[in-house]
View 1 (cartoon, rainbow, N blue to C red):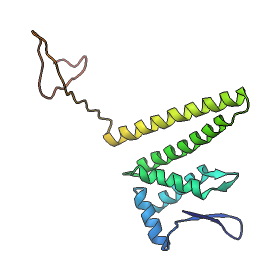
View 2 (cartoon, rainbow, N blue to C red):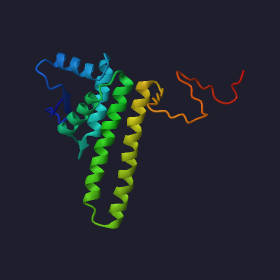
View 3 (tube, rainbow, N blue to C red):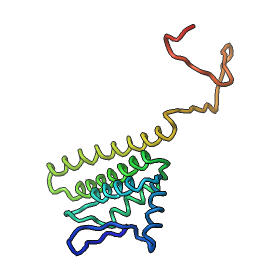
View 4 (cartoon, rainbow, N blue to C red):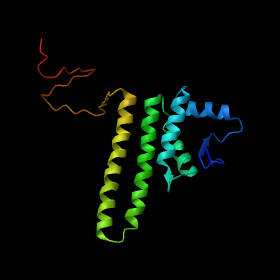
Length: 167
């Protein structure tokens, strides 16, 4: 994305591509959508997240878009979650910088608490994306089974209905 200020001082954000229409189409494809309103909205939200001192930072915006694109979203929900992950990552790194430059214990404690919360949030977002992509299904593969003398084993697919579901 290319970020510039127009003559009135308003920030303009546009695809950094010789053909603006094709650039927008490629961006929509990377965000797994055909809805231009979604593309514009998500770019605007990422631009807000990548703002420093009330100025949209092109480098940060493009980094967050690269994170979203790298997540290879398959639909708008995945694109939004990847955008949140990018924003949380940016905030986590900003707090890591603040923690490294803390000048007293109060600053250090504050930065450390926020850093840890954001790091846990990012890990939870990764798990949420994984669950969303798999439909919440979990698969367990048992590679080695030892059956001692007198023991019994079942080979094949086993379905467990849980407690209270007896026929």
